[in-house]
Amino acid sequence: MITYILDTETTGLVEPHMTEAAYSIIDINNGKVEVLQEPRAKRFNPLKEISLGSMAVSHICEEDIANEPPHTDFRLPKSVDYLIGHNIDFDMAVLKNAGVTHTPKLICTNAMSNYLLPTLESHKLVSLLYHFHRDVARAQAKHAHAAVYDIYFTQLVLGSLIDLANSQGHVITDVDSLYEFSQMARIPTHFSFGKHKGKAIAELATDSDGAGYLKWMLKQDSIDPYLSKACQQALDTAGL
Image (tube, rainbow, N blue to C red):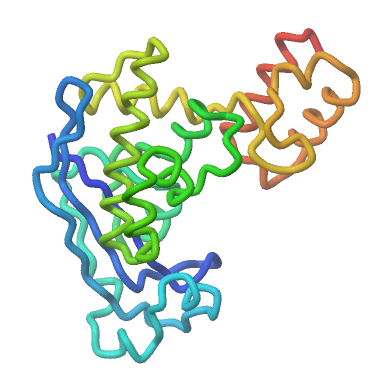
């Protein structure tokens, strides 16, 4: 069983093409992250314009990757069983835009952090690094969005999230149980955005205004399918 922690830097949010990909190989043994291969990275020519916003984040400009191989040269081995990342669904979409057809099971540390720390002010990767590993964050957070560093940060945050989950009565001992927890955590318990940010979805269903908001959310074409499931479950439980 092979598990990657993976991160990509891209051209932007619209039809993103990768400008850099990084990964490490890890395992989970007795609830602890074991690094089997240290992070490594490779840059690619995305074959499209890089947005200014992405340049401001990754500091990768078109002249930096003009002579790199095309992003379609990226290969994800079919032997990879799991991909772990912060908002890993976005990275998987980037890989698909590069022509990757293999889809491993996806483990999202962002979903895990929202589930375990629903009222935390921010669930961004560097915010979580400051929350769990302030000394590391103070020394190295300036390197955030360099893909290799983001892999390292994700490794640290993942280990802390597993410890927190186990302390709350969940049982994560290996990658399989980590995946099962991650899938459960994808169904949010609290809103992470909008006017009800930080509020419990189940509690919103107990009054008319909150229930109306949940029903309105369900009508939105762009609603995340896991959020849709959480809203519908809350309404069903409330008998609405």
